[in-house]
Image (cartoon, rainbow, N blue to C red; front, top):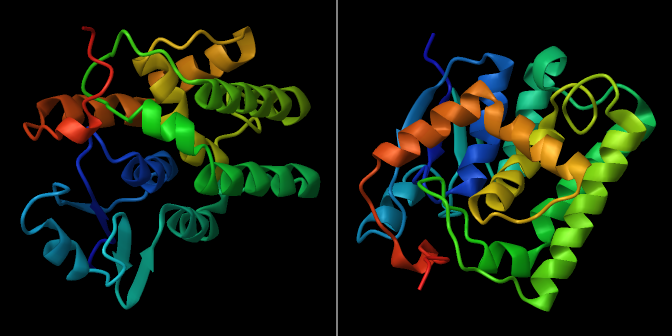
Length: 221
């Protein structure tokens, strides 16, 4: 039987691709990886060959086709509930889904000013007031999730869940740009960085040769 295929973008830049990739790795799901470098002359056509939405990531498995990071994470959670599912407690599960959806649709200033970059650290970036407010909101989310539901492990809800896959790129952004964090958020970001699959992603990212200047922000003057 053919393995599922996950279509992703550059590992240096594509935070949305990292999310389901990380969840599948954590779940121990074997899959094939198709990497399409973004913003090249044929990138859009190559992506649209897999999904008319024209964006990565895309999960293909037989006749199944799922696009959008959160939708893919939901699919993975259904297939591997023990390793990659949502929290079992209804209140925790509702909160996990809520904070994942909030991340999916918000934090525009943070994402714009602290562009995801898995290749190397950045210095000299001073977040705007809007970005600082969003950073504070993220820290409060980490603290509330960990404080209310995280006693059973290192992750937001104790065990690793789709919420951690959704928030992992934000935690890595904080490390990339040297954002000062309160202890709970700092410990969570360190746990994300130490995940073996994250280590693998970053190692692969550092071997990529594409450079997209629009995402190469934060270089010291």
